[in-house]
Every structure is written in structure tokens, then in C-alpha cells.
Amino acid sequence: MIDVHFVPTPNGHKVSIMLEETGLPYRLIPYDMLKGDHLTPEYRQVNPNGRLPAIVDHDPIGGGEPFAVMESGAILLYLSEKTGGAFMPSAPRRRSLAMQWLMWQMSGLGPSHGQAHHFIRYAPEGQDYGVARYTNEARRLLAVLERRLGQADYLAEEYSVADMAAWPWVRATRAIAMDLQPYANISRWFAAVGERPAVMRGTEVRNAPNLSSLRPALTPEEWSNLFGENMLKSSEV
Ligand SMILES: N[C@@H](CCC(=O)N[C@@H](CS)C(=O)NCC(=O)O)C(=O)O
Image (cartoon, rainbow, N blue to C red; front, side, top):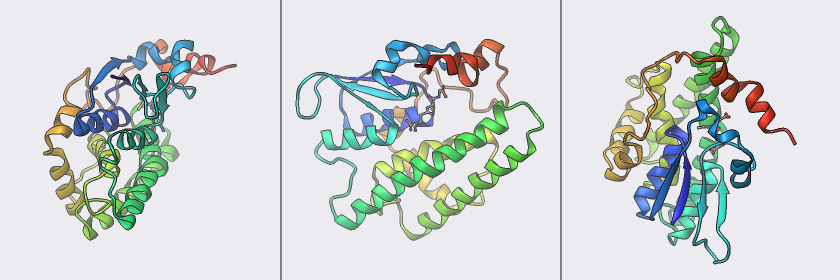
């Protein structure tokens, strides 16, 4: 059994999609970040970085004690290894492509779109520089994705962990009012991936956030848990 420390966000959905795709048995442990569920010393034992998601495999690769894995990209690769290489292409070039696009998602698409969400949805209004900086970067990355998906049906030519990593972030563009219509290749790929039964199951409502709420109203306590003093205090040594 695999414990999934979970929030229904793009990073969380990467993992729930992969678990549904592979059919591995898992148990969701839901967190409410607004309440600061993730700020506890107990959760630091699971994920030293204190962010979500993370997994604990009670029957880990190689045996031994339960094993914790942080970082959604590393979790996808761990689950692939656990299932004999599922959703990692076996041909060397495609395998490298899957790695390249997974790294691109983890270092580019996710962080930059995450900052766009922050400045558009959560930052005090009037932060024009931050909004422009990350909206531009978010659009640049969508253009990169659009070009890639004009060359191949999937990021690594065949459906792989790279698509599972990128797809939930593209899905979340609706929360920052980005229109996918001008991106014909992304739209085709987005529909094809979204029709996969495992992807549907992996993203179905589990305390799903209201993606249409452009500016959620946070209490001072909720703000502090996400971005302020409470968050900082929890990471002090
Ligand atoms: N690179 C990390 C990012 C994890 C991350 O930032 N997760 C968000 C939720 S999607 C989080 O934990 N936010 C809580 C916080 O910022 O305190 C991953 O891919 O797992």
C-alpha cells in the first residue's frame, strides 16, 4: 500500500493520475493547506521540504522500511520504476525525451505557472510587474509546449510520465483565465489525455478547489499558513 499525502492541485494530480494509470493500490491522505495541515513537524518527517504531494511506500522497491518520496517528478519516476518502467519509454531517444520534458515541466512550466497563479490570484492587487513577468513566462512556456506538440502526438512521442506532469498544469490555466483556444496542438493533446479513464479518475473531485474562483478570499490565518509567518515558522530549524 502507498500512502499519498495529497492536495487536489496540479502537483497532487500528477501522482493520483500515475497511480490510477498503473493500478497500484494507494490510500489518499488529504491535506487542507489553508488550515496549515502541512506545517507540522510530523509532515516534515515525510517531506523535509514541507510541500505536497509526497508518498510513503510501505512495500518499497528493494524491500526494507517504509520509504518516503518527495517532489512530484521524482514520485512519478519512482512509481514507474516500481512498475517495471511503466510510462517511461524503453527506446533510448524517447526515454531521454520523456526525461527532458519531465525536467522542463518541473523546472519551468510548474514553477512559472505557479508564480502566475500567485500574482494573479493571491498577491495583493496592483502587483503589475509580477503579474506581467509571470503571465509572459506562462505564455512563453505554453508556446514551447504548442510547438512540441506540433511535432509529436505526445511529449516523448508516446504517452508518458512527461504528459502526466504537464497536463494538470495546462488544466489549471483556466484558473488564471488563460485561453487555450489559440493553441491547436495543446488543445488536441489536452483532450486526448483528458479522455483517458485513469486521468479522469485521478482528477475527479476530491475536495477539488474551485478552479473558477479567480481570487479566493483568504482569512489572515489562511494567508499566513500559505505565504506568511506560519509557513515560515514551520520551516525554522
Ligand atoms: N516541486 C514540488 C512543488 C510542491 C508544491 O509547491 N506544492 C504546493 C501544493 S501544489 C504546496 O505544497 N504548497 C504549500 C506551501 O506553499 O506551503 C513538487 O513538484 O512536488
